Image (cartoon, rainbow, N blue to C red; front, side, top):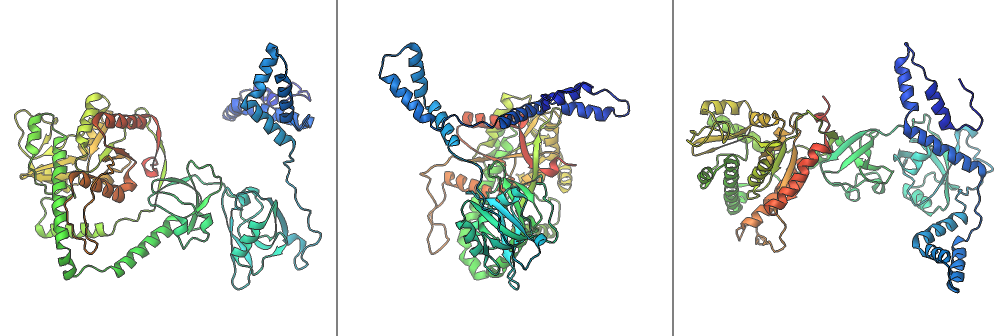
Length: 608
């Protein structure tokens, strides 16, 4: 092997090692790994940078002068007082540019300042009550950043210990402070028996550096590497309103839908997390999934105790409101089934049959062949489940990107009646029928002369439809004029099997059934445009009785707000419904990104 000279750089050494590697029958795989590592361009660039910095450090450069700005101003003043040559005019123009002035200002700032921290001398004597080996002195240079640690006091002994180290904070990056360490002094001030807020005040008043006298924990915890666990928040959180958090200043606020990187789950009650996209290195405290679920369960129980079921008198008082809301729900449901039937029709004759609908149930899935008593029991069970929804805390997620040859994600469009989702779907498919398609619904009504099997509908017998309903093969189903209609899972699969993106229009309640590893749905909420002049329903402050009916626009807005409130944790994005072409262009951008970009999805959709 050639001998390297003393002047040879580290990157040259790596390049020489790469050239000297020889294939070996017994270690061929290891040699391949070494060759890939040493041949990596980024490693070579890093080594070159290292060599340049090392050479610069050996030269020990010092600034030639500390007032480049003043010198430049003097030169400009001299040039302005006499006739100038071409070169002098160019120099004057360069010195007048704001960019060069900024560079010279930065030069003077660096040249005139010593950036090395000035630390106080070590104390000459230690507390005689401790052995030398049991005490350590930690000095941290203070800046505007918090220390990144929480403390607690033992009420019996008065000892102050480190309760938690915030990942990415100053204490964590130093590697000198650990959970369980006992604080004895802060900048020479004894903290035994002091309250945590008093110690925080001492730290806040400290300038330059902080000197801590610490009795190390009996067994220092290893400095754990940050985990790669990502959670999508399913609720809003404000630590300033949380009385249970050990330190509100250390809390991390977030909004529903925000993806969080959980970097520590050492504490079963309070996790440490960062918001994805934040530049702040320090983690913050958030309630753990288990703790948040316990709190929600307690609040639910407390709410049941404080708000018992209404008595007959109370029900009678609210009868007018209930009747009004039932009528509104019936109208909305009729519109919903009308939209559901229209979405599968391709001519005006078909649309004419949906003008006066009565809906038996698209708001919930039901079994058509059960006895009335069994149906009542099932309805009671569904009502009970609606009264006790699942606890919305966190959902573990990971990045997912569509791969060539893989099944395309199903796109679910939800929204209030009148959002014209069916019209939007038809335009998407008409513009690009090779990439997009819609699922064909099932029906038990007779086929008309102009209709074709599998195009407008799948025509099946009532017995077959009911059997499929009992087998949970429908996402949605309903009845109109004694004919049954439904959207089946198999109809969606038939579209995705053709290597197309299936567009589905269902009620929000049906989204959960489609949120599986098979479909990997992307859910879009169609919202009506905001109108500042929208009239709000008139209400009496002394009663909840509605005194004025809602107009259609206000009803759409309220319905969309209700969907967003109740099912926002299932929605990936919202799209404001404007005129058709504008909304189509927005939707087209989203659909293209689904084919190319990566998105956060539940981790069980990716992991087997």
